[in-house]
Length: 110
Image (cartoon, rainbow, N blue to C red):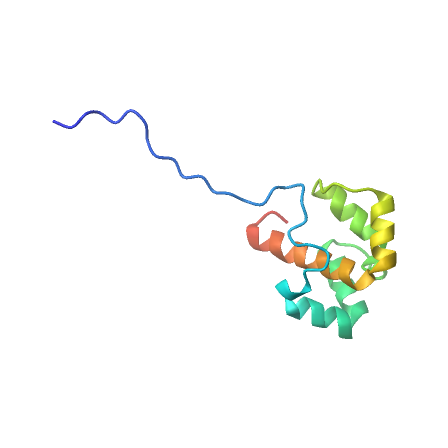
């Protein structure tokens, strides 16, 4: 006779933490398509990001859109961080935002 099962196995699905960027700022190689789009058509990529967030196309490359996104997903940082990031490396900042949107969409959390 088998002993009774006292504890059932449980499945734990690990998802990225809500309050983090899905990729690093300079992690362009993780999605080369986004990187190439940003390098050759920066404004087009900005419009994609803005459309994903239901904002005006002119806002896609701005510090404001990054701040709104960061606040929405509880990503740590400040307005000053967003300003400095967008000012110093607008391409990396925009590509990071687009990669993050794509990853969250794939995970069903966008």
